[in-house]
Amino acid sequence: MATFMLKLVLPLLFLFMIPPKTAYAEFEQWCVADEQTTESELQAALDWACGKGGADCSKIQVNQPCYLPNTLKDHASYAFNSYYQKFKHSGGSCYFRGAAITTEVDPSHGSCHYDFIP
Image (cartoon, rainbow, N blue to C red; front, top):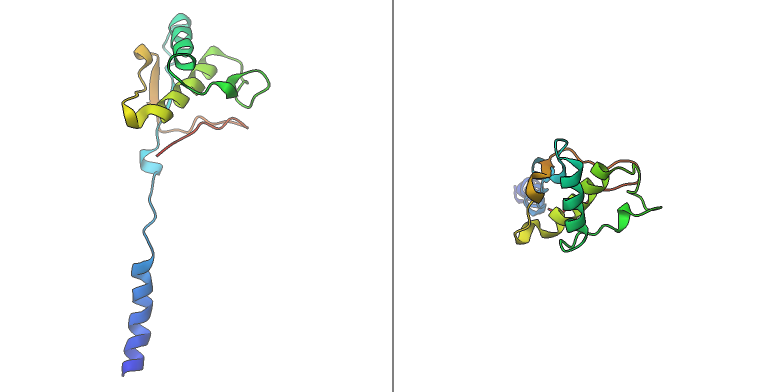
């Protein structure tokens, strides 16, 4: 009887030892340029994000993975997301004076990877 109980209880104990997987998919958000923003507003927000904002804009430079497509909207989206991911847990937002919005669709494309930090 003891052997039977051991065979029954032991597998159940192992199930309780396996930690549950964390599902981030429901909460993943990226920050991208709002399609309705004017080019002058996008440029000003991009300049701030890559300057005083502290975003990592190295990947949108010439010959880097996120340079193409070489559009203001695409470069601004990458910079906005870089800032947002870096500072969202310490008060940073995805606002940029109305030039950006959050999305749950990963904007990564080709060799250009947009970071997501849980």
